[in-house]
Structure formats: C-alpha cells, structure tokens
Image (tube, rainbow, N blue to C red; front, side, top):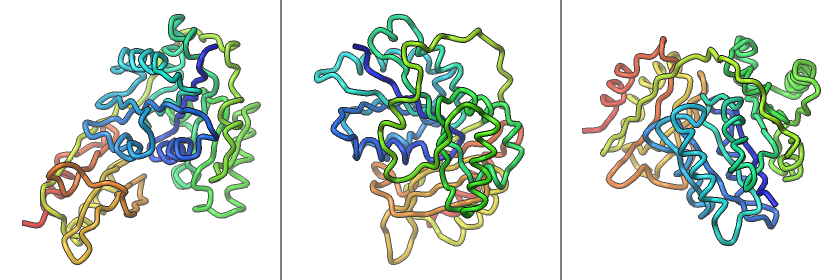
Amino acid sequence: MAIPILLVAGFLGAGKTTLINQLLRNPGGKRIAAIVNDFGAIDIDAALLESSTEGLVSLKNGCICCSLQGDLLRSLASVTRRHPVPDAVVIETSGISDPAEIIRNLLDPVIFKAAALETVATLVDAHLLTNEPQLWDDPLWLSQARSADVLLVTKAELIGQDAAAHLIAKLQQRFLPKPVFRLLADLPLEILFGYGPGEQRAPGPARPTSLPFFATTSWTATKPLSLAKFQHALNVMSQTLLRAKGIVTFAGEDPRPLLFQLVGSRATLTPSPLAPGDGLEAAIVLIAREELADLTMITSLLDEAVCL
C-alpha cells in the first residue's frame, strides 16, 4: 500500500512550520516523516523542526516547484525505503512555491506507487489577507488556494471573531466546493489525511505560469545585536520585505536567543528553542519581491546593529 502524502502549502509566514511541528509532536500514534523546503541558504524551518523528529529531510536554497524538483523526488524515494516504513509523509513547501507544479512532480509513476499524494492543505493567513486585500488577485496566492483540497485559516484571532467569520465565508464562496477550516491547536489528523482524492487524483494539463520572482539573502552575525539599532532596521524591513525569519540574540542582561519573524508589517520576537548556530549570535533569511528588493541596504542596516 502506498504511503499517504500530505502537501502543506501557503504564502510566506502563513504558519506551515507551526502546523508541521504540531503534527510531529502529536502524531496520533503514526510514524510521520517530514520534508521541508526553505527558500534560502539558512534553513530556519528545518532547524525549528529538528528537535521534533528524526525523520526530517531538508531541501534549501531553492523551491521544490522549480530548482529542487529532482531533490524532492530523490528525498521522497529515500523516505519510502526507510525501516520501519513511515505511516505518512508531510511535505512543506516554501512560501513562494506553486503547488500545481509540485503536484505534477508527485504524480511521477514510480513515486506514486510507493507514496501517493492524498491531501493538499493550503494555509491562509487571515491577518495578512485582511491587511493586504490585493492578495486575492495575486497569481501565486491564487494558485496555492486553487491547488488545495482543504483551506486552513491561520491567525484568525488577530482580526477578531466577526472579521474571521466573514473571511471564512468569502473563502468558501470563492473556492467552492473546497472545505475551509479555522486552524485550531487540536485539529484532528483526519482533517489532513482524508480530504484528498488519493489515487483518483490525475495530473492536469500543463499550463504556463506567470508568478512573481523573488530575491532572497541570508545574513549572519557573530556578535549580539543592539535592540535599538535592530528596531531601526526592522522599520525598513517591514516596508520592503515579504518575509524574514531567523534567530537573534541581543546585548544586555538576557542573552537567550529569540525567534524573529516578520510577515508584511507584523514582526514578532519569541523565545527560541535553539541557538543561531555554531559561533553565531544571529542568523536571518530575508525574502522580497525581486523588483522591490534592496537587500544590500537591509543587510547594511543589520550590520550596523551588531555590537562591536
């Protein structure tokens, strides 16, 4: 019997890593293997997941809908040959991946016999979609939503109960007949391993895609950062970047590492379960639309935030 595959898609910062962490920590008695894909030379997502599972494969510095297609299929073939055999495989796409292309890759006849795509779950960031309504017409976001078997709404608590209900109703109307759920902490596995058409899924006709191009860079520091200067850099990043994620430490009384995340104009700093890396005090991945990117300026501002 083929191992079921859950493909987790969603725009930058929608909460894909959080969902996969939840699945790995509460697998419901299943052996779950995870394949993650971060668009950057520093794979922050994989680092955050490493403490959760031994069955983790990391693909980085590209996206699995284009430059890493071969890596994905080879990694998936390797996972299916493990002993004991996993009960399920979860594949996390990068936030800039087009699931339609990945689905076609997963329908490779050799792979499909060993691991069959069962469900495509696309995460929808309620806060981002509410504050950036132009995403409703964004080609990449639309492809991610249309490729899904089920839509999972994240961060609904940030927009309020009434706004969340309105957004879910709009998603249901726009993408009928796809089921739409608000992603909760106790989401049952049956929701994720049961909505796809499984072996009835057939490859669709190839179609050209016109998706925005993205620029990415990775930045590291070997000394702690000044919080005030980092906040200055953050003001610029929030106006320029689509997404930033990393682990940082600040000079001062509390040297503990913090997980830094930026999605649009919203930034958070929370305790990190791991350090930035050997000999590092900070490691950040920056992603922007290519035509709007000035990543050199941002890395210069981050350089200025390093305490000498």
